[in-house]
Amino acid sequence: MSDLAYLDWNATAPLLPEARAAMTEALAHAGNPSSVHRAGRDAKKLLEAARARIAQRVGAPPDHVVFTSGGTEANNLALRGFPDRRIIVSAIEHDSVLAAAGDAARLPVTGDGIADLDALDRMLAADSRPALVSLMLANNETGAIQPVAEAAAIAHRHGALLHCDAVQALGKISFNYSELNADLMTISAHKIGGPMGVGALIASPALALRPAQSGGGQERGRRAGTENLPGIAGFAAACEVAGDMGAVAAHRDAIERRLLSIAPDARIHALGAPRLPNTTNISITCVISSTQVMALDLAGVMVSAGSACSSGKVRRSHVLDAMGVPPDLAECAIRISIGPGTTDSDIDRLVEAWGALYARTRSRAA
Ligand code: PLP
Image (cartoon, rainbow, N blue to C red):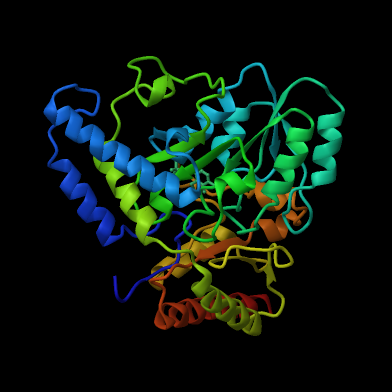
């Protein structure tokens, strides 16, 4: 991939060699962690060791970790797990939260993409039924970091539970589940250099979480189905190896400086918010997102149009809409997300390709 620039780390991070090695080793285990014989006990040992390492990474007790097939399943488990509670979700949540929450009330955000906590307080005060609030730790499209600890304090004051989707925060900023005081937290392996298809919901065993599927009693009855042991071993290895991304902020800043010097009329979204160190969401008018993504791809630069959509179709971002970004600008946004493997030449390639695209459209407009 040396002549290609992969700048879509928020979609998925390249698999870490340590995760690959841990998975290969786990694949050699014959046992099912639920079996009582020796091979089963060995597999169970591996599973519990991985659980402890992942719990340690996020500052949670190991018995809070419920393994799932990824962030989407963990979000569904959390949002559908409390049928007696009314749900409030921030308007900028990932689709897996929004879809699972159905017609839940939407918590508005500011123009910089930060959840409005006064509105949360009012929404909780207005209805005394027990609630579940879902607020992500970092937004996948803009990188805006949300005031989760403050939201948890407000939620708890009103007797509500707080779920936090920390999928994009893990491996990018440091945080601690216990200090954030969230009741439920979602994490996913492939955003930090672990494998795709494995994640976890962090939830106290004391919570009356309704399981999503029936079957065996795995994961303390909270998630039936034989655990994906190789995936979980890879997740644990990635949790130990992946640092946070503080050091990539200099690259992110250089990208933004250089793009804005080419196109002073470009707009970087959530610029005034605390943001992930690796994410830039930028719009220029007149060139829709999908055209920019394709033009950059032809030049060997991989970015995405806001959030990656499984159908491959790009629709206008609900995140930018919620921030009040005008539609003509929101339709022209791309997300550049970098990682520790991003090099100076990746950035040069991006700046050159994007600059050429910008010059073409401006000369056409003139
Ligand atoms: N939550 C957020 C904020 C995400 O960015 C993603 C993936 O893009 C998910 C949840 C879903 O995670 P997974 O891909 O593991 O299902």
